[in-house]
Amino acid sequence: MAKRTVPPPTSAKSGSAKTAPKLDAGSFTRMLAVETVPDTGLDINVSASEAECAALAEACGLVAVHDFEADFQVRKLDQTRFKITGNLRACVTQTCVVSLEPFETLVRADVDVDFAPLSQLASSKMTLGGASAAAFLGGEDPPDPIIDGKIDLGALASEFLILNLDIHPRKPGVLFEGTDVGGEPADKNSPFAVLRYRS
Image (cartoon, rainbow, N blue to C red; front, top):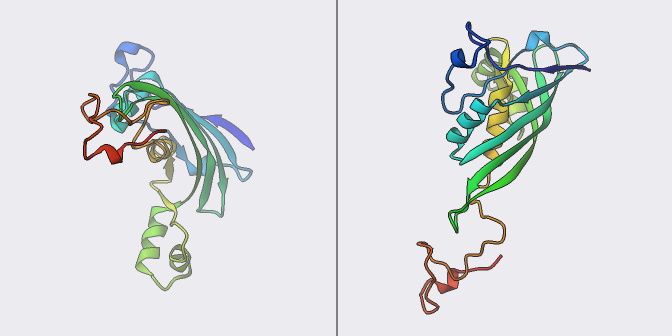
């Protein structure tokens, strides 16, 4: 199986940090042209630059993203459909919902997604009696779209990062007991005392 590292997009004036394009929030793009995937498949590594980590942090509502990378295995299911499996790893700083303190945490996620051309997906939705449409409606998730012959591996990795973030992050060792919403000691006779719990 061939191996490749997908580089970040470059500008016409690449080569100098002063001329590097400014990234919008959440901008992390690594385009893979599906026509370049060999029959034996392809191993691909993508990683975010410092600027891209900052953009990801802003887009995800995180204090910071310190490290973000993913290893993907791309293989053909047929001449038009592809399967991408792999895993991503990220070191992020979140804000504890109890103490409001920032803390670092590791995020890991497994990836397993099928892709098909956008035109094929559109025709499947139009032809509900077709075999491909029936397969999509049989309990399986429909494939993600291949747009203009390309798959955005950066967007795929970003999506799985967001899906695997703890929406109520709590710093290890921090307890709800004895603390109210404002951070002051809670009254033991408070009607909300029954809502307290320990880790």
